[in-house]
Image (cartoon, rainbow, N blue to C red):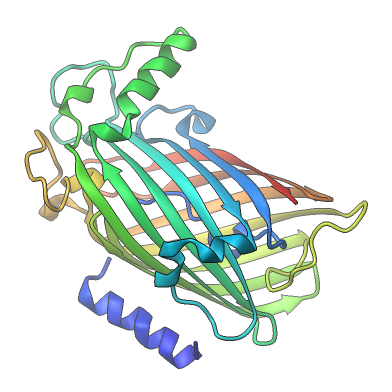
Length: 322
């Protein structure tokens, strides 16, 4: 797929509906794993930032393998015509709460309780010659009580002998998730295995989250190129840090505004109360040894609606190649 067509496609989506719903981005270069087959667990929680509010937990399990190109939904994804393409599927679960989980009544002006559960079919295509990456993903699932966040949070809090969550009866009601996303990255500066600066553009459209984003990724340390396929030689050790600031232009978020088709949710954030421009910065450390990958990160996000506070959370990522 030529670059001109990619840019036209991104602009086209953006113009339809300038567009966080889908939280865990496994597609960008700071999440790169230089292998065609691997298993990865991403876990995010505001516990890492000593809070229990807003985006409270995210879990993403994924499998990448050349065999995944036969998965039917993979046929709907765009990719570069040249270079290497990785194929994968994942299951993602996200949970959201207001700033207090101790009340059975609706906390007006606060975030609504919400949850999302979906299958994520994705491709990552890499053009090593021109130092560019094109990723695409199709997410299908459900937002609402059917996602099971109420039961999950209550079970976790009971196991930790923590306060029992209240208020889930007022969560966003069930609706369908169908979302399509395209990410494009271009390296601007590369200094061997020690420094890389990439520019990124993303467009997302669907029933869960509509938005467009622009950002940069800075990699520093000792790492394999995000445009290679050279991971997992014997006794290989890599350690590096990354920085990823990003501005998002938000059009719609079902976890705040309710589902696109089911408008019966007891409490939502109105369109006029959304902040249409949201800034997020993510900083992380990564260690790679042979076919094992470990990451820890912290992320800070500006207000998504007028009454919200700035939100901080963290997470870990563990991956194994095979």
